[in-house]
Image (tube, rainbow, N blue to C red; front, side, top):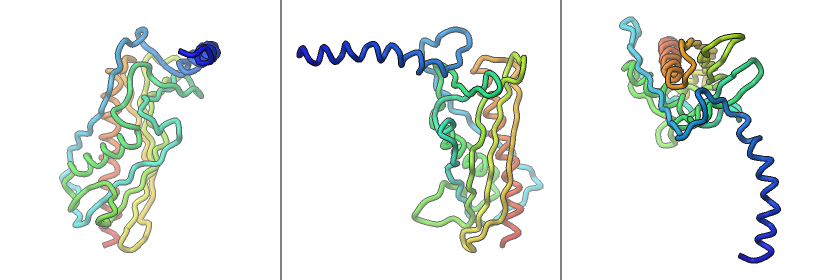
Length: 213
């Protein structure tokens, strides 16, 4: 190793020592430091309501837009009002917007009420496009709470792509309280909240889509 390179590395060490605590300060740890990285991939299990009509239309569900803080594979948590952090030693299997998109594509597909449900593609334009804005996707501790409540908030806009017409916009907010604070107990609440979001949006899309036929 050259003398100049050695000097450069020693010069960077104090900077790294200062940066490391700052990088870790945003992590929220329960039960001590994690020795391995845990990857979570929540799934949706939607039970279709027999009263929901079928719609002879193809539906594309876009990847939600999101803030920089949420457009990440880190699992967001608010340990106190006004403080957004992430769980230490754990990540989602994909960035949160992609995770939400995948869950909703799966949920809408499970409803079996559309000709097809896909992500948007440049090959074939779907009849309907569901655009989403992900505003919250996090575990939230209220004052003095021993366990968090999972909060998912989405703004949905349905577009008839054949007519180039907005059919409707609505905001969906789902809250699911966890009985325990450990992340492995909190993740199923994310699954439940995603399933509820799909169950709320499916009949709305069917209603708005049918009205535009």
